[in-house]
Image (cartoon, rainbow, N blue to C red; front, side):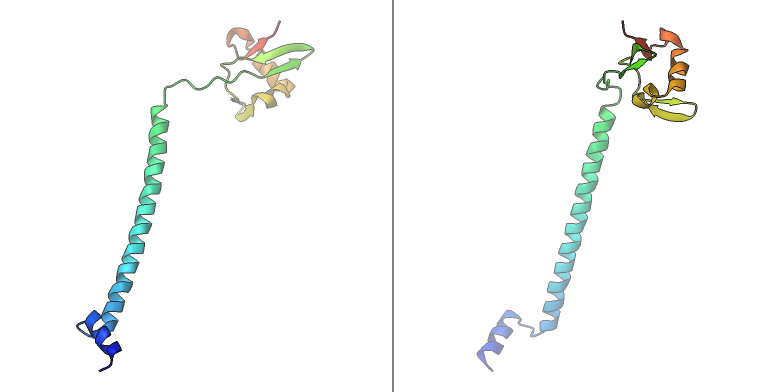
Length: 123
């Protein structure tokens, strides 16, 4: 028996190297699977944290964005600061900028007057 065989038999008293290799391979695969599960759980936890943050912010007033100023028929107007940034008109969604460039939509909104406060005349 050589010294190599003696070392080998000391490391593996049963003498079955295939089982040792298989168990190491199995352990490595399990370790990788666990790491993948941990990563997936971390991603899920981050997504849940984002959802929780969003739910906690419900009901809190959003930052007010100043309304867009524009000129129509040589007069200055402005969307009120409370006006939504996107407005649905005739089944379509328009931004304040798109509305300010569309004469028909401006007339439609101005037809409501300042009562509803979407578009205000600047003096």
